Image 1 (cartoon, rainbow, N blue to C red):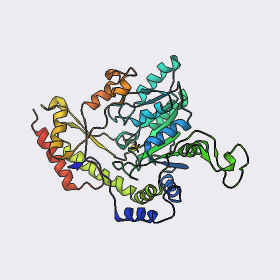
Image 2: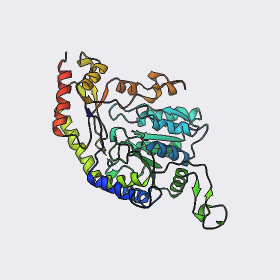
Image 3: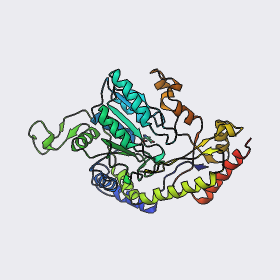
Image 4: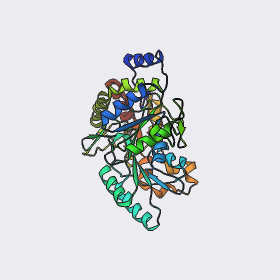
Length: 388
Ligand SMILES: *Cc1c(COP(=O)(O)O)cnc(C)c1O
């Protein structure tokens, strides 16, 4: 089976992890800060807080922004459930904004319309999570302008997008947002096995993220309510969690970061090959906004169902049967049973549902060879070749 995504681990990665195993610190040592600096410097952010997953990073990002009971978090339906669940963790309500039919990202026009309504009903969102689907950045300038107008905060869920750029600058510099989150799950662009990171340029938010990562406990006298009792002293000043990343994971991350440019460049090479090889088939291929340089976590094709005799499911199953490990990103979150019980209806977000009925993620990862890619293409051709 050729998977849709896969990590790439070199001997240098293995050596870096083994070195940490032999060192004094398996957690809370010097490697996590080193990893944080390597990512922050690469993308141009002031602060970076590494955690055990992007899900944890999204949770503490929401908490640091003060999201709480009776507040609203809005995001795109076409995302992994974690982009929405983080709002529920904080006791907030979640709602969605439909996607743009070309980029599949949260649509700023739909956002503006929904904000106008919400303003009248006095239920404006406190946080909007902008998900850079497949690695292509959202229209951050437009979303940022709406944030200024309607007074909400922005988290970029850049789980798919490390190494990508928006208007010539790396995603993660949070120019138009409060906090940006990366994921280092093995299918993502850079991996630490499990892991995530929250980046911000705001000193206060960084302080808060640091506290929330580790029980709300500080050893910094400047953050304490009284003089330390002695050198042993720490204080719990907030209710936090244990969301720490280990030194082993950070060592893998530092080693992987050295190849980030290469990872993304290879994905672009593969994507343009797909663009050429699949161009004549009844498919809608990924559209890239001229302002963006995608991280290209995913390559999603959409079936032009009117031009094939097969159903979406039949094509998907046909690909799997022939050893192509396709996947579907994502089942719109509002259709999940846990969200449906909140009152969402499938047709609340028609562009998201239209996308869901046609989308298939085909193999896209650094180690995919041209031979494997050719095989993916020929299986797709063979299946769709039985075109009406
Ligand atoms: C993978 C992913 C997450 C969750 O990342 P973890 O590191 O597995 O917690 C969140 N949002 C999006 C868009 C993702 O793709």
